[in-house]
Length: 203
Image (cartoon, helix red, strand yellow):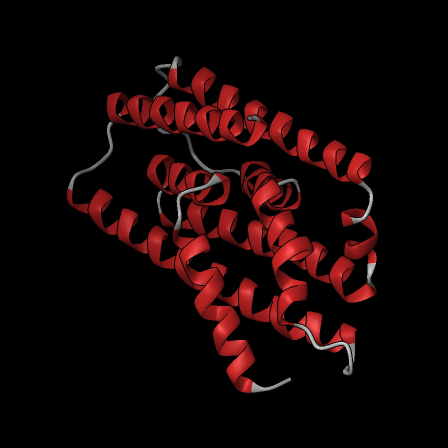
């Protein structure tokens, strides 16, 4: 695959990654409520989730799913339902005045797992892999290799953008410590934004 093709793909997907969506909102909410470490764990989970899409694309299953409107619609609505679930969890947490809790290993694993599921069930991510990725592939080359290279570019950009977002939020938070009241407001706003994102995806 030519380097110019990879650069063109990177230039195409970077604005999509930087556009606020389920992934970015989830990472931001975790970094705001818990700091740098939870945000980075969520970022790692999201990148791992996109590895699943990458593997499906490399194996050619993405084309099969995209060719089946019923299966694609089922995955899309599953993603919308999961986003709504995350939103209601944030809203429920915003109603609890329990302060900042210590992060246990179970909570850490949960942040990674929720990030993973957010990416796997993210309809925007599905569209990138099912609709956009094939436009940058040549049929006279190895489909699996091309899909893997393009996926690596996308996942790498996601990791960079979301990690920088976490660092920025953590730096701002270190100057102005998030107390419990701010934490509740942030989680409430993040929950509402996720609900809006789920509603937009549904319509």
